[in-house]
Image (cartoon, rainbow, N blue to C red; front, side, top):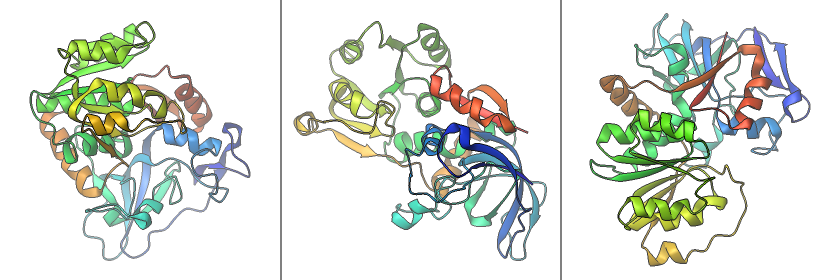
Amino acid sequence: MKAIEIKDKFGLDSLTLVDRPDPQPGPGQVLLKMRAWSLNYRDLLMAKGLYNPKIRLPFVPLSDGVGQVAAVAPGVTRFKIGERAAGIFMPDWLCGDVDEAKARSSLGGGGTGMLAESVVLDEDSLVHVPEYLTDLEAATLPCAAVTSWHALITEGNLKAGDCVLVMGTGGVSLFALQFARLTGARVIATSSSDGKLERARQLGASDGVNYKTTPDWEEKVRDLTGGVGVDHVVEVGGPGTLAKSLRAVRMNGRISLIGVLSGATGQINPMPILMKNVRVQGIYVGSREMFEAMNRAIALNKLRPVVDRVFGFGEIRAALQYMESGAHFGKIGLKI
């Protein structure tokens, strides 16, 4: 079978199309013939050696993909040949709390990588995907969608009338926008592009703030909420934006810390967290239980993930370069 590997060194130029032996499912396992994949910012960091620089090379990247069940081993009861399935981000995190062992099982980050024509996974680490979604739409769900669901619904207990701030228009932020609107919450979006903000409004955002033309965007967010602040911030910037998020959130509000798009290092003043009684919650994707609950909500509401641009299987370098450019709106896909 064909697969994409990061060969003997990190860097986008090391992404190489290779031949690998066809995998065979062992007891309790399922063989997927892959149909589509989607990218996350983590995949770019992995390729550059900035996420897990100690990972052994070569390795197959990517956590997100959907395929058709081509074979099942003895003992498999959850899946039948011909059904579509996606792997969960951490194959060992089925329910309950995450721990270090479960985190080490993450697809494309230490465990199995999905960017291959065929993938074998334990049946317990797979979920069915909503039937009405295209392969590309379904492939967007395992990381970004589950992360947003975990932040707003599982941990956030979001309710109608709440106000959510989403930062940027990448996959996590747009899923957060869509899930917030499903609950009847108000959404304020930020972006450096007025065009993207208009598209966010079309998805249901009530307001948009251009952080390039409005550098003190946190003050604008407070103005939009009558000086109170938002109930929930979906924080994907990290150290470079967290101080502004702490200003934008209300007293007793919540910040879900999800990404580090502004960089992984920086100084944070803890006083606003203390004085505003704010809860800052780290969110590391989610469990199979969360994935399946999310899928039920997606299917019931016929929600459609936003897919920006699609590349061919062998165009992974170009796809990651496009991600790095920041030009995308929503998810970037790959398809055979």
